[in-house]
Image 1 (cartoon, helix red, strand yellow):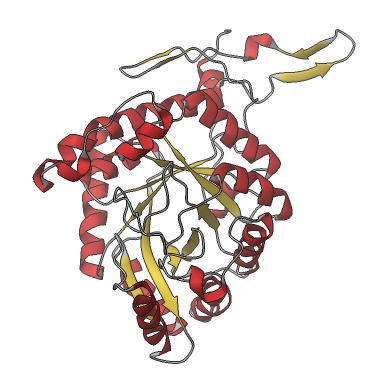
Image 2 (cartoon, rainbow, N blue to C red; image 1 turned 90 degrees about the vertical axis):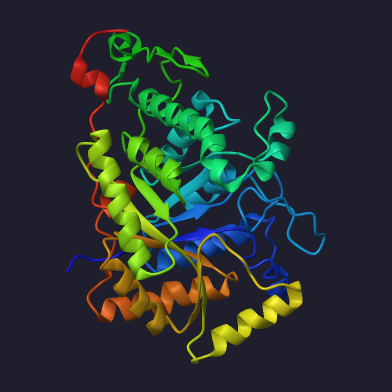
Length: 396
């Protein structure tokens, strides 16, 4: 049996709204983030994602939070990633960047730069911004009032944002390809630093924007850094099929996971996706403790502090690392390639994921004892793609 892929999603003090009350963590310091990523790397995890948004954090995407007793501050995810990348050597680093309010040229430059400073371990979680409050922070456009839409109309309301996101991903990928791998020649004798024949215009014309190119950043070490998307329903699943390498989904049972995987695979066939199949990761919020029952008690105490039971878009697991390993094995049989775990409290649950869960999986022959390569694509078993322009040939 092939081995599981494991990632962790890092957000502030953890995914429980009261997590900040446990250790009063210094979430606005570089040391906090460096320590978390180092712990994940010691556990040989595939990669970490770093959450971001243009509005205060919320445990439910698209739902604003006005409570003063919850974390309402965060640092920029791409800047955190650039800070911690040189401090690590193997683990992938995947910041979240919105596709709705960030120009694709800037995203392509930032993630390519991250791939250079991490020596080939960069990725990007492409996220749609559907909140009106985020649009007002930027001030260039309006977005539909999602909270007033009827549930049966949500897909209709958000579909244009996801169609736009698909265009953003396509342009970012073209910009990464716009320099051929050997475009920089550094020929001192002739005084030529770059071979201009190997730089290409991307010439994208779409409904929302037009981009000429080429990129200002040469083709990154991985050629194409990892592109990931979180999806809860058909519309975001389609975005993953059209443009991503990894899709995070949120099943609530093994049967549900099988249904989601079946829908995504059918969408791949319908869209004519060829080449490497989409990697599908299950997302779970996790509270762990070696003592049976203790994790559930810890979560209840946090719920009491917060004054409400934790709600999440993802399944909430409480139990021992061994019990979580059992669940992952069961859900993996549904066709999932791996899991992105959201620690309820940092660093507590991350530490048990990195040290105890991986040990339980390794005992079953389901998790690695060393990193298989040096790049994130190698860790995930993905080849390095050739530049589409180099394949097509022709000068800019």
